[in-house]
Image 1 (cartoon, rainbow over the protein chains, first blue to last red):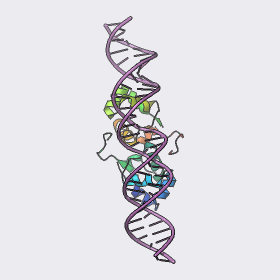
Image 2 (image 1 turned 90 degrees about the horizontal axis):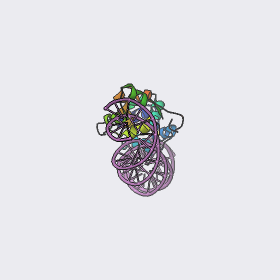
Image 3 (image 1 turned 180 degrees about the vertical axis):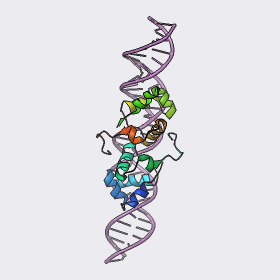
Length: 69
Length: 69
DNA sequence: AGGGGGTGACAAGCATGCTTTACATGTGAG
DNA sequence: CTCACATGTAAAGCATGCTTGTCACCCCCT
């Protein structure tokens, strides 16, 4: 799942750790999402969308590598 | 995670099984989402949004029962 | 030389999404 | 009554999200 989390985070001058605290997840989770080692859960995607004030579909897009599209 | 999947599905006259086929998941998965026994993954939420042509935030909303909001 | 912040990654372990299989209920048609 | 279909739920098992802990590399500062 491609995403713009790093872009949105660094535009706000935050570290991965700071974003993790703001979202209630670990630094490693933020890192893994940014490096696309895994796809966040729907609740975490909502938390990201709320935090950055963007729609989920603006932040994530399917990369043609998943059966769910 | 509250959702409008049942509403959107029945408005289109589809069974849970038919929706499952359209989404590439099992009938039980559709049922469990509609009865809110669990929250779908982000890829499945995307598939639902595409199928029903609604934004994810229009279809799901957090129910104050999750730390991720 | 040493310390600090930021990042990338891996491992073990627990929680949850999703599958198949299976059983129960209700409804409408023959 | 029997059949078909839609729905609700449960259990076992596999896949994945997320945690803590740890190691490594970079850059900057002292």
